[in-house]
Image (cartoon, rainbow, N blue to C red; front, top):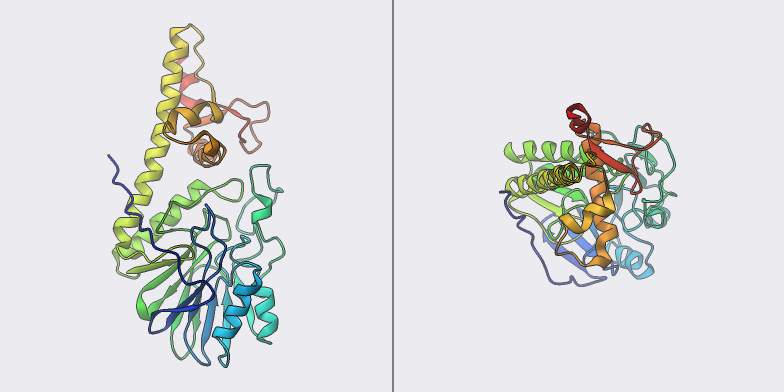
Length: 333
């Protein structure tokens, strides 16, 4: 039985005000609370005086942008770092870049740049939640190092939530800014085609190994409060995803037994048929969001050969309308 994820809920932060989290970490939270952003986007400020780094400048909210400018009056910004290109993370970068003349933006690349396929977004992808306008001035890859006299930041390419997702490790405090890869109040949302569950599981393996080596002892996600028990937390995250995959597999098995009983012998299912079976206690209003999460897991199962689509064109990326079947089913028939 997988362990329950030890989520940490926290009270709303003081919007538009700067919080001191450690000797070299500060935060300003945007007033954009939602079911995806929790209390809002936390813009992190690392360093002081002439060595300031901004991580995830946030959404285009005037009061938030002005709060960042006001809080850093008289200080010099060296880097503007972007974890990924969702509209609650990167849009304010352009305004702040212009305000601090000469500062560069850093990120993995524009939206979708970490994906093997360059196909346009599918209907499942929330296009209005994506910042397609952002392209970093400086492209970062995995394990690059940014230095100042005060601190050292190392980049980690952590795809899954998005293909261009980065985390940033602050060496001096053994802190990892996890963006949306790991959050203290909820699991991360993985929405295909840019979100990919197989990539996400590899990301969790990477974070788990770093935690075991003691490289990261505290996580600061972009949404919510800090996570201290990082090794246990990431392990629980992994177990949750593996449990969900097993539940989907079991659902196919039960459907196969059911159809065999009625002499149909196919075991085929659609995602929307499985949602109410697996999410029995979920409000029906949230079925679509659950279906998108299941789609990411089923695509993972397709990639590892557990499941296949019954679509006419099996080369196409599976969608919510696809019909699926266990690969082993046909072998037994």
